[in-house]
Length: 125
Image (cartoon, rainbow, N blue to C red; front, top):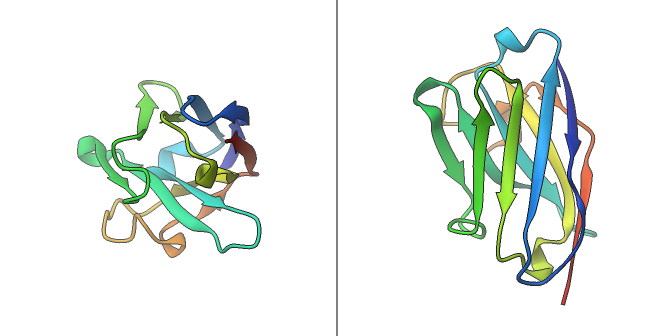
């Protein structure tokens, strides 16, 4: 499975961006996808995830109510709509795909089997 993330850019605080992650290859083996981010000098952290079964969604507390993860039906694409962006949201955002349908590890890097390249989001104050 190959993942291609896009949609990053420069935005002012309070603005919005929509990230996309397009999957190709053996996508039928996947059970969900997620987004992680890594700010300069910090460790990678979980942002949001979605599981195909029941379309369950998971969010980090820091983005809950501002970010929305969704999947385009019949398309191997997952979106991350980011609203009310803050300077602390500045990071490289990575998408990942999981084989396991379990939601118990949706927030952990270990729950994902495939990773895409990152897309940079910069939020200016």
